[in-house]
Image 1 (tube, rainbow, N blue to C red):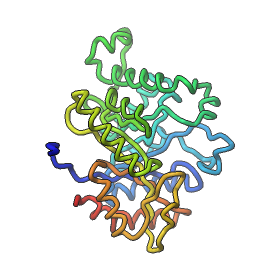
Image 2: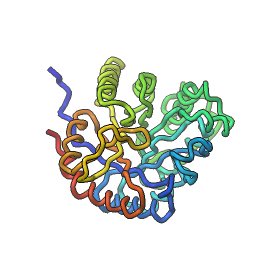
Image 3: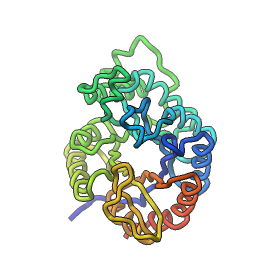
Image 4: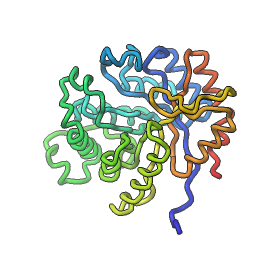
Length: 308
């Protein structure tokens, strides 16, 4: 018998259009503000510094800096959390990144959710002069640096920073939640060792996703971690009355598409283990983007918060 406490209703976030054809300052602000008003729990931004010419057809050429976007949107929203989905850790010097993240959390009143990953786009690493093969080790070291600078509570870990002063520290105590992105067992191990949860996407099949969730829970308990890990699932959503092709994807990820009732039914199944849905709104233009946002808030979120 599973003696874990009954799961809480999941939270819902939306990814702002900070890249691609819909990326405009006005649209990012409008989506963030409307998400805040409509009852979404969080807004999220993606991370790319440069786009290889071979990837422009996927990402577009306009990609706004993730951390600057979230700092800007913190000032025009009141309560939504601010998530990185995900911040590619090896792209930035760890002390500089720790400072930027702590500043966002302090200025926003403790609203940051730090989704992180080690990266996958080798051409982007090359353009930035970052070493691709060592990206996992660099990520682990950087996360240790973040926590050491933010907390200063572990003298052994923080000893290398004893001659410097780092302030402000994050508003959240002890620090913003760290969710590890990635769809592999290595990502699971990093989540157990260094994070508060996992941030996968529906690039994974449902069977693979469920298998990794089981692995995460088993590893979490074996490591003596308290409570349940957060599982924030990145998921494309399209409300439509036209039956979609079940094989259709959005940027390589499986879409949850259909009528509001069909989407709610699918989310209820996933909510058996997902604690936070990070929704990529599927839209071809700004009109569709805002129409979908309203439909999801009105017809999906109320039902999607319920567990069967």
